[in-house]
Length: 262
Ligand code: HEC
Image (cartoon, rainbow, N blue to C red; front, top):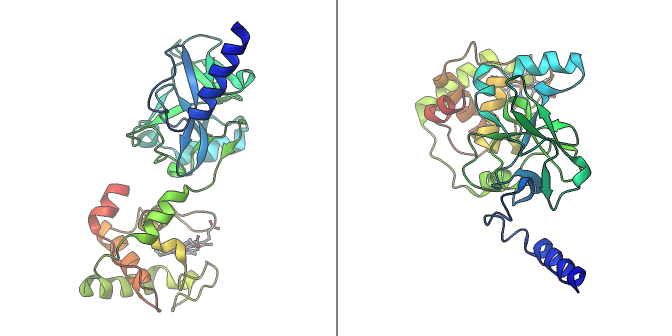
């Protein structure tokens, strides 16, 4: 009888997990199965905040050196270790064998999942937010089977696509045209047709203003970071130009947007 009731309670909990996420299951859990609209089920802290692992914590020393350089002090200040309630912490709707803890240098216990040390992100306001995903190409959410999830959030892309197109400032567009020719055309082609770098003409990715701004500021792969050599106004102008030249109609980008992301 008791077993039957327990099974019923557990399956009810499993069924209700997505809707009841904000109602924390119990305060004995260190980690729970979180449900996000943008990325599906992910490991979360007990309050539902998405948990991220930082590649700066990666075991391989060559990866670690590169990741450390990418996640500077400012980046690290955005992430708070998820506190483990004990050395053998509990997970809710998670494979118990993957839930663990590691002792930090200051003696506190940090939650791990499948060995990945976990952090919450200051930019996440509510349970289910995934604003830290891909931060500085260092912070990534962890799936409920313990894999690092490097995919892009779906909702952010969809939201960017349906957002009404911001007006384009003519003077900014002209400034962007000059700056693009001087800075980007060598690799992406004078008409955005692509060369060493990807084509920007007809490129959907640049419709996501935040992703585009970050691409310019941070770079990726063989594209260098332009943060040191371009002022916020230059970055905004280049983005505005590329988003509205060559048949692109993706709307303007403001200097404030760049300032916030730098
Ligand atoms: C030295 C050559 C080089 C320069 C200069 C350069 N890029 Fe790139 N860019 C690349 C390469 C290579 C990639 C592909 C990077 C990768 O694989 O991660 C890329 C990727 C991109 C992407 C992502 C495209 C996609 O579909 O994911 C955008 C957007 C972009 N660059 C815009 C710019 C802008 C705007 C400038 C000028 C501020 C610029 N790039 C300057 C080489 C360059």
